[in-house]
Amino acid sequence: MVEEENPFNFSAYLANARKCVEDALDTSLGPERPEQLREAMRYSLLAGGKRLRPILCLAACELAEGDVEKAMPTAVALEMIHTMSLIHDDLPSMDNDDLRRGSPTNHKIFGEAVAILAGDALLTRAFEMVSIRTKGVPADRLLRVVGELSLVAGAPGLVGGQVVDLECEGKEVDLETLEYIHLHKTGALLKACVKCGALIGGADESLLSALSTYARGIGLAFQIIDDILDVTASSEVLGKTAGKDVIADKTTYPKLLGLEESRKRADELVMEAKTALDPWSSKAIPLLSLADYITNRDR
Ligand code: GRG
Image 1 (cartoon, helix red, strand yellow):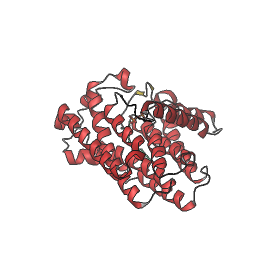
Image 2: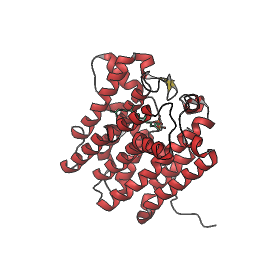
Image 3: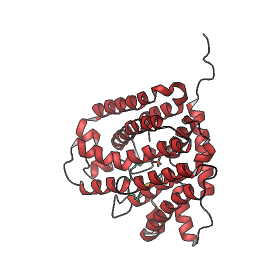
Image 4: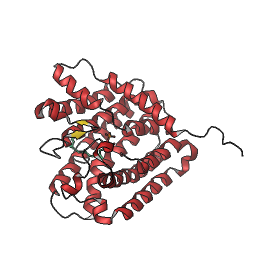
């Protein structure tokens, strides 16, 4: 049998990317004062997690043939926005959760006021990472990245999705509304990750457009898998409270479509996402593998 030359080793790729991201996250927070705020910011930012968003950003930069080192502050910024959204999502006034990434939620340790403020500080630090701490990237590209972050963190993105989600609590929700919520709460940030990485790498409009299609597919697939895992996985494995959707009587893909059909829909969406990157063939292998990882994950 002829061995394939240099087959792509996704586990090694993921482990290496995670290590680089963890190191960058660790050095991203300065000597914040007061100490309590610094502790609260570090507590959630360095609490583990899959680091999918920064890795998507770096992989997209690589696909655009950019220097991934230059995209690292933006990758960190995206993880900061993700982390702050988790801190706020877990608050008693929102999802009211006690467990996140296998540990007590931020407000359980630091109290609600500091948790809100740690989230605020991470959000503003994200903009600092791009505008002040990125070196060697043309200003026009950074301006577009700042624009993407403003949109995704605001009403057109995470905040808008969260408000519709809160409004829908305890109500019957149709598939269209469910998709609206997920495209805004989850999909928008994944899209921003690949767009920002590609922008830093100097991508042209055709790559940016293909990446948007890719991100839409993986964004919805990601959420379908999240809904499935809420039903099928344990809190121990997930690192967050399992079965919450059922307890809160939330509308989910499994509730609307059933488990089997939901799984099928996720597979179709991942296929659509991957097809969008066909023109880039083997250069897109990291992003293609990340799309598969999203549907095959167990947490
Ligand atoms: C951004 C200003 C601003 C406010 C936030 C609270 C809020 C508004 C939005 C909620 C967004 C939210 C929590 C969406 C859910 C996203 C999601 C599927 C999270 C889980 O992502 P994983 O599995 O988590 O990648 P890890 O822990 O691996 O990083």
